[in-house]
Image 1 (tube, one colour):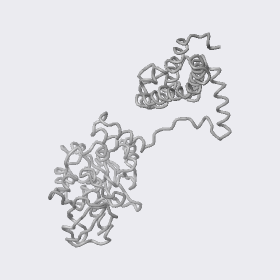
Image 2 (cartoon, one colour):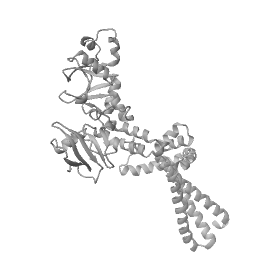
Image 3 (cartoon, helix red, strand yellow):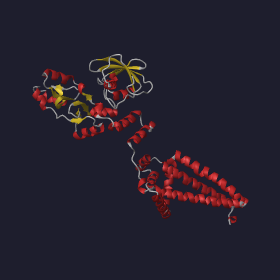
Image 4 (cartoon, one colour):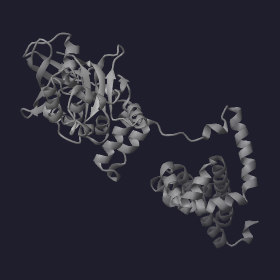
Length: 426
C-alpha cells in the first residue's frame, strides 16, 4: 500500500495539495468580491487579467464549477495522503488524530486565511488567477459542463433559472452612495456637482424659478422712457415683454437685438418686431426634463404656468446650471444676501428666501416638500399671517417673526436647531 511511498514524498504532496486548496478557495472569494465597475474600467483599458476575469464572470456557474472541481480534488486527495502518512507513522489509531489535525490545518491555511486575504485585496489574487483559470476552463470544459448540467437541473427543481443571474444596473440611490463613498478620489466640489446632477429629477422648475412678483419685464403700455430705463438698468440678457401685467406676456426680448435699433427710432412697434415667441412650461416639470427641452428647442428662458395658465415665474437655463455647479454670481436676491448671521446661534432671514438655497448654504434641514420660501412655510404652518414677536418651531429650528405686514412675513429670526420635533410645533 502506502508503505512503498517515501514519507518525505507524501509530506511534499500534502503541502502541494494544501497550497492548491488555498489557491482555489482564495481565488473564488477574490473573483466574487471584485467591483464589477472597476473591473469593467480596467478591462476597457486593456488590463489582461481584468479582461479574462470579466469574461469568466459572464458565466459564473462555469467558473464556480471549475473552482469547486479543483478545490474538492485537492481536499479529497489531502485526506487520502494524510491517511497514508498516519498509517506509516502510527498505524490505524493515528488516522483519527491525523484527520482532526488536517481539518484544523485546512480550516486555517486553506480556507479562513486565503479567503480573508482575498476579500481584503481581491484584485491582487483575482487577476493572476484569471490567467490560470481561463485556459484551465477550456481544458476541463467537458467535466465542468456535465457538472453544471446536473447542478442547474437541481436548481431548476427549486424554481431558480439561469436568467436570474444577469447583472442589474445601479439604482439612483446606489449611485449616490457610490459617489459619497468615493472619498478623496473626488473633490468635495465635484462630488456635490455629481449629487446635484442625480437630484435634477427630484427638483422642479418651481424650486429654482424667479417668482411672479419678482419678474423684471417690459410693459409695452408704459412710457417709452420707462422702457429705456428698464433696459438700461437690467442685468439680464433676456426680458419678458407684456401688456399691462406679466400674465399678458407677448414675447421675450433678447438684449443683443437692441443693437438693431441703435440707428433706428426706438418705439413700441420697433420693439415688438424684435421679440421671440414666449415659451411656456407647466409647473412641476423636473429640471432634468426641462434641461433637455431647452437643448432641443435651443432656448434659454421659459415662463412657468399653473394649471389655469397663469404665470407663476420664470426659469432660465442658467438657473438649472446653477443647481449643478452653484451660483455664478452674487446677484441681489441670492440666499447669501437673504440671510445674515446675527449672533453665535441666530440668523436674520428674509421672508422671500428660498428654502432649498438656505438648506444648501447654511446646512439646514428645513422641509422642502411644500412651500418654496420661509414666508410660505410659516404661513402654511400657522394658516394665518402672524404678528411680530410670534414664535414657533419648524423641524427643530426656533423661529421668531421680526417684521410682517398685511400680506406677508418680511423678516424672521432663526435659531440653532434643537431637538428634532414635528414641523409646526410652536
